[in-house]
Image: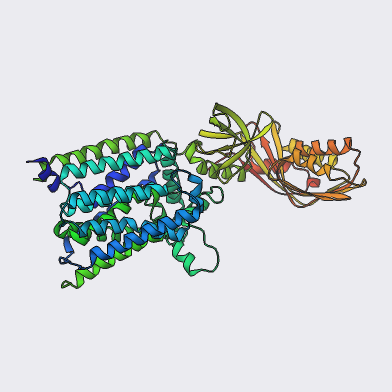
Length: 348
Length: 267
């Protein structure tokens, strides 16, 4: 069997496989391993995710979706994001990748709008899949988006642009197997390069994240301790007149870090800090969305591929950082909502 | 079909390798001990808080780097304070701070940390409020009480409030000198004719040093009064006697309302 066919028939892109391997890899490179409770939580969460994925994959009955204005809409969002990025740099007084101190002067709202370039890029790629020179256009889009996100100095968004762009191109059959593998290698090199530029190449960063998760695993109990304040701090901030501590800052406070220190606690830390054992439901829902998206992306490509790529990308990147940003929750809600709508309203 | 797929085989192989690596780490991990890797400093502080709560003085063995020079650093110091990801320790008669491996603010960026109880056991006493004619007399009273209970005393820790009336007009520099003796975790309030100590982390030697310093500065104390106090008699050797046996040794005039022997620093 040819390698490309084997790749096509393999389970390598199954969301649960990617999540399990990603988690194992993260734990393996960390200098610290969690205790028994930590492992039990990770296994439980992955188990819930697998169950959700199986249900999503088997039961999803969406139909092919053609949105006439997809290209225009995604292009407009892309341009708005680019403009927001420019204004953000202008108001901050510089470009963070060249001077990391500039990052503290970035406007959070403008930065969030600039982040929309990543999903806009994925949607745009799915919209130009049948165009002439689609491969070159896609490459230019991916490199341009990753480059723009690199200027912000956030590794996560650079990787998100590369991985999600590559996945959409694969599902929409713009790239072949070898090309998708090349993009994967570039993504790993970009991650390593940016880590080196930020001067935190040691495994201590990962170990701190795992240790923070382990601490939460022991403290969270059955019902959690923060009841939504970690994962949905930005939503609470919008609704509240009083100042609200950011999700990762709250993790820092829970584990006893110095005031103002932001600490990541893996994909599993924030849900369990918030809801304890009930966080398993969250992983079941993640699995449902990922499973349904995986099926739809494989079967129909197009906008489904873009949606699935975004969700999968942020889940994988969330293995280190956790999902605490409003913008990522909005991707989850929009994607889940779209898949739900597509399932129950077949004639779109 | 899927069985012979080279990518699926690759995934399984990678998973097995990773699980083996994690399993090995798990088997040699720092669980159930007082040794911590640097990134796990938060857990070390949690453990220290438990030990401190139980009345134990704790030594911290560190290995890492001096953040200003990048030179290797290793040594042992007595923990004075542990909070917010940082230990403050007394190391070679200096107060220094120890943080995690990526810290830049602290003196030491630790790669590994070990907590060791500085002694074997603690007799925790609850004392009713009392007054004395001087600070020296109060210290002597506490030391005598400690000696009736334990023969090999490591030190006698105290927590509570002590107020001193001064016959002499006090000057603010005295406040700094007292602060230097007491160290972190304790507070001193200054009045022109008196001092108020809020003590959480000091021992009778510190109080004796303060009494001596006041005497050298020609400050005469007219009266010393305390709140209810907790006295921690720290013993270098394990205590064989029972709580009842020790209670029988306590003179009635000592006004001790509780006595507890703590034999383990963590439980």
